[in-house]
Image 1 (spheres, rainbow, N blue to C red):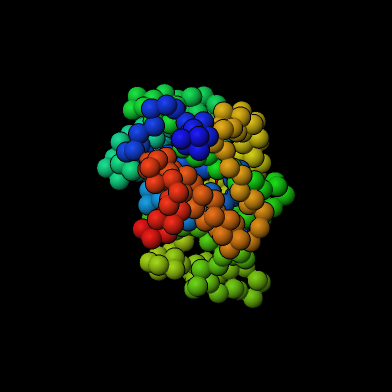
Image 2: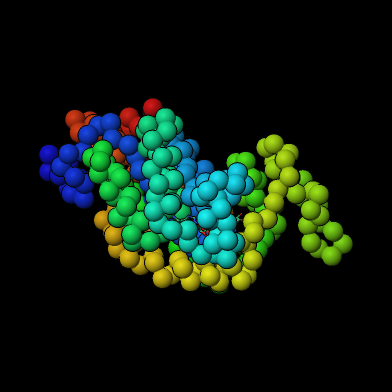
Amino acid sequence: SIKISALTRSRPENFSTNMRDIIVLIGPPGAGKGTVAPIIIQKTGVPQLSTGQMLRAAVKAGTTIGKQAQGLMAKGKLVPDEIVARLVKERTEQRDCSRGFILDGFPRTINQAKLLAKILEENNEYVTLAIEIRVPDSVLETRICGRWMHKASGRSYHVTFSPPKSMKLLSNGKPDVKTMKDDKTGEMLYQRKDDTPEALKTRLGVYHKNTAAILKFYNEILKVLDGDQSIKNVQKEAAVLMDDHMTSTFILRNPYNLVDAPKRRSKL
Ligand code: AP5
Ligand code: MG
């Protein structure tokens, strides 16, 4: 029981076995939140909720929220906290979130972190893991300006670091737009409106202004991922981090199986 109390130190007394796994992904624009999410999905089986993607869908659909968000997003500014928090709340009430969810790009302000805590408290829940993807600013412009995305799935590619299979280059070395297609569906890829050096400057400024407070807020459950490595190595490190997380939550859910926990997990 000594071991259990050490493990549960940062968790509320009322931890219950059917609690949802709620994971927060923190990182500057281009850090690789969208690139690491598939690994977390694979390990946990819970869906990724990207507020950026939800907002882009609202813009495309021309909803009231979309109209409020459009101009702000194109400039790289934040959409008001209450709007984003409401989007997240509604989304997390859907059935596919019954075992948990990954928040990609939310919270982005300390106010959003508090709003999230309040939403979760209503069900006696809390964030189980926060992952900071740490990357120096200097590599982000290359990542952002070389990115191509698949609209429906949110999958991202990169002209240099992760090109789609269909990509062909023109004689000037730039990718031929017609050949930029999604590997899985063959649908056309596109470049985001806010993926310009000017908007990136604003997005980075916003990130650095708000993030220290958020990291402090999640201090006890924070894990840092070195995002300044090849995509393959970042994903490998993420897989190890998630295995640790799954093992420790497995132990919390099954305190009588403490000794066998890791062994049992690998058999599941
Ligand atoms: P959002 O869509 O979340 O954008 P972001 O935070 O700027 O982050 P990105 O999606 O640009 O980066 P990423 O970390 O996902 O990188 P990726 O994996 O794609 O938000 C957009 C906007 O919506 C905000 O600016 C704001 O206006 C609004 N918004 C969203 N949430 C909000 C909130 N909570 N509150 C208020 N407003 C909100 O990787 C980038 C590229 O690099 C890819 O091409 C990838 O292939 C490549 N790459 C990734 N990892 C590596 C690597 N290790 N090495 C080399 N290349 C790599
Ligand atoms: Mg993203």
